[in-house]
Length: 354
Image (cartoon, helix red, strand yellow):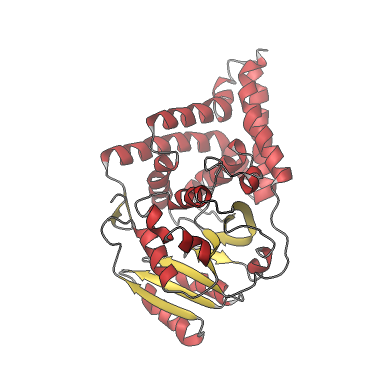
């Protein structure tokens, strides 16, 4: 039977089962004390900004500030229309990142300086915050917390690739350890939904510490951990939902922008990641026609995807797309490395480098 080929698949399966049991969503409680500012960086987000603001005005945040990051579409006009209806909504106008800064950190810095809350909630324009989200944050004893919203998917590329975010978090980290660890290496973050004490961010000197970071969310969480701040990473399935990308091209380009920098922009790290994903999540499928023992690895992969589908509400039929999803991941990882090596990465019409 030669079942040895299936043993590596048990590692991510075991991590996933543990995290599904031990990494629980926050319970509802009291709203955090003090003023809360919801901050939205927006560049050419006309298709998203109305739904984003409609969700935010349904919460009890004290102010909602949107930075128009030199948009060329109707984003600022739509924000101004909301500001006319709700006095909590304000528009800041940006002119693009200054020299040495990338767009997202520069936008977050401008939003921080242009807001007044004791707490700041950064959300991307494609995020839809649930009305009671703030009541789930009052129990969290952290200076900086990021949450993974529920990910909505529609096209085939989204259905293949987006669930791999949950798979990645759950397969290789002991997620409850992020809450109590003080090691900057034991970290995870999601920039789609970040809640923090203003004083904590100002103690770091704002977003200048990550001004040139492509994957700014992880870099910022790591900087906060190094500074002795309390950092947490939570399941945000009940806090917000997000559709990250709207087309196959956006899926491929978005992950190509982030994947290689996200693993440290290291050829060695890339080799390790590709080896891990291949041996644990793909090899049993490739070997099955010739090695009967690979069947157990295939079953472990499928059961892992079932656990993820139940926990994060993935489409059940998409479980069967698993080997194609891993192949897509490998191709995108190689493309991401090429983008970084060649300096050809762009996003929203801007180069992804300083």
